[in-house]
Length: 373
Image (cartoon, rainbow, N blue to C red; front, top):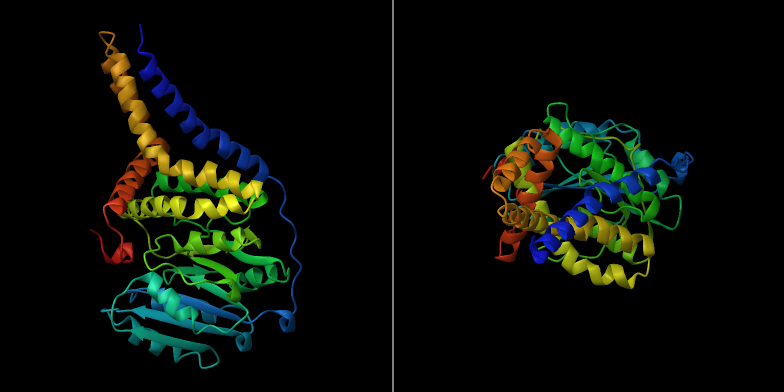
């Protein structure tokens, strides 16, 4: 007779896993299939003033292209400022940025050089004290965007209730098949969440907020691009995900680099689940609460639940002669599927990152490409 406790462990873990990976995404995909509301074009004189805030750590390979990208936008130069914060760079990023900025005298570009590497959060907090524009655009140096991206973001702020807007994101074709499949899956979820709860975390590559809604981040914040917009939603402002704002990542993340990135995201997921859940519940916004619990909180639990289900299944199968071998064989066959392998590895990396956070890791931000280990 099967052990009832082991059976309950398998059924509970599997049920939550199926809900998180299939039921919730399917519901979000259905919601996301609804046509998005049209946004009217905004005349130049009605566009808000923008400041682009770009933290940089050892971005010598990308900073010139980033400034070229900003210069190629169709946003009125008189309403656009740029702050590039060099976080103790040791590769000449600040010098390259200054030389490239000099090619565009019509743009208001300021290079702020910090001598000590203190981390992304410290740079963001310091740069935001200098921002006086109506809207702030946060962007990664390694990301580029279409010429109309800033105008599209800014048009959303014609709605006085709008507090934060995030853009869509496209992976490079050079990324692995698992990365591309998983990203399409996540994009479908984000489109559904947008109808239900707004922007449940932005792509750090490009998103905007009303400047006065920014509050300084705790210095140990990890997923700043989640914390900033969700704080704004908790305060009662509208937020929006706009996939027509197209962003491209210039830096290709290898599978190894993606693992390191997902460990850090896993640590951030645990941090934000613990710190932000009380505020989300106090918001009394049913869509926000549902999306946060179903998407973000359950994601933190997926790694431990998968491990629990596997060991419970092995112990249950041990009650038959060939049971353990069948379980291992089935697991091996399942891992042949790129998307499943990518998802399972992602949960493992996230769980390792959460553990590292619990023991005091992730106190300073580094770009994955700059620190491969």
